[in-house]
Image (cartoon, rainbow, N blue to C red; front, side, top):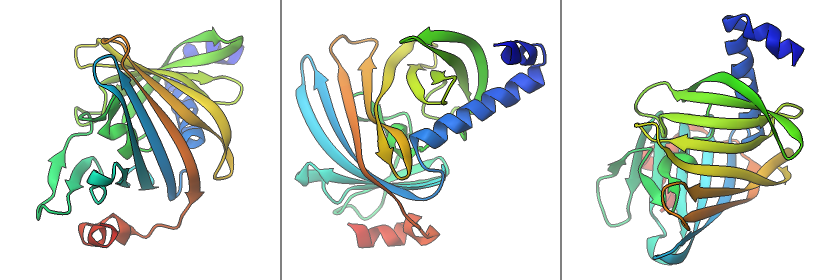
Length: 238
């Protein structure tokens, strides 16, 4: 705490510390190099019941991502491509791709950007709000402010374990600064060379009983050439 208190007296140092914490937390969530991961999303709603969907994500850095729908079978062949913050969906029977927004809902409580953007570091300016004890362990509470209006969320609060930089909890806010949903990072397991959260629980803060559980599996490092993240290459994946 003494080191943090000293840095808090120097805003430049504090900003640097916040950036370092965020980057280390991001590196735990996902590899910094090219990787592939399968994601099973189960969404539950009071009125809609339960829905299950599966995706495969290919990602390289924070600027290039391909999201393929594996299930339901009726939507297989649909592919999302992200280049920078530009996001399109390609559909087998539609000649032209359709432009999407990162903040648009993908399924349940999950936005397009939750799958398409691999880390927070490239989209948000972090600062340290405070430290807080959760489950007996001390955490940094980072405030993340979007670098522009094109990011998935305007504002995020992120709890990061002080001892090991593991993300513990996040809160996502609307443009009007209203809490929209929360996320818990759970079930740390070894994937692609280090312990990572394999279960994310997203809960709607505005509608009781609305929740999505994201389960990550089969993660592996991959050497993904730039051509994979091109419109022409996607035709081979469909």
